Length: 377
Ligand SMILES: *[C@@H]1O[C@H](CO)[C@@H](O)[C@H](O)[C@H]1NC(C)=O
Ligand SMILES: *[C@@H]1O[C@H](CO)[C@@H](O)[C@H](O)[C@H]1NC(C)=O
Image (cartoon, rainbow, N blue to C red; front, top):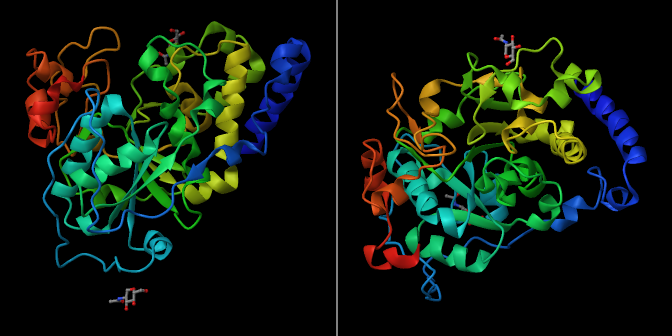
């Protein structure tokens, strides 16, 4: 299945390359084997007990220190004093990946806080953060806010992705960091077999270890699916009218899913090289506009119809309202384990602007921002 779509894409891309101008032909191939060299990981978890100050400036927020969270008795043992690599590779560690961006920092901090607060085994969780710039400052900020957290900050070379991104309906979706989730299998330690990817505009109000234990069956990703949404509209006529491209969905029933909450099987990602397949689709998109939104459609193209469905309680999405206006939206009916402010409205902005929606009151208790630094935004 994978080979078929990859091979079809290769054929199509070759045709495109021949047809396209010399200028675009010079652009590196998505299968460029040097792509990986553009990423490097920062060494070492922060040493315990050596806090460092974040250089202050008007454009930098400060957060209050979160309390230390300790494992319950039922937790599997993870030796936190072993060296970093052994710790990361410990089979009982729980891996969560998020991006770190100044603009969404307040959301990221609230998300981390909510996860630690609700899990029985907070000491077993390791966070893997991706930053496109000011990595060192962001690392210090996470460390001063969560002195007991085990985490790693990786530099994400956005220049590599930038050239592949096409204009989308909402500029915020074009941030190269949005594509970091496609590169996790390349960036994370090879011993990591599974990771939970989370957006920064959410809070978790249940034990993340339950989500971690999700069975993925034969699938490379798991996410709540919404099969009543017609995915036809995510792709352009140019896509549907091209038999080679649209055959991707032959015999499949793709359902909408949100890429902001995913359980990802890193072993499958590495063996099937899904990153390359996603890049291949991005290359097609940059020559022929085949979709309008930028971050979801490549995932739909690659995984649509073969996503392990996870209970909807793990992504109560859309709380930010629509992409244009950010109107208030109520919670969907049913149990809630994760609240996600996808859409334009973000709870911290609405709270500051005194136009809070009722669901924003559920986010507020996780806000760690020191009010004195409110002016940063
Ligand atoms: C944890 O790892 C360290 C370093 O490898 C080792 O010295 C120590 O004995 C280990 N502790 C336990 C309880 O296994
Ligand atoms: C989805 O939408 C397209 C066009 O908007 C329509 O042609 C198609 O029949 C719809 N499919 C379903 C299953 O409703």
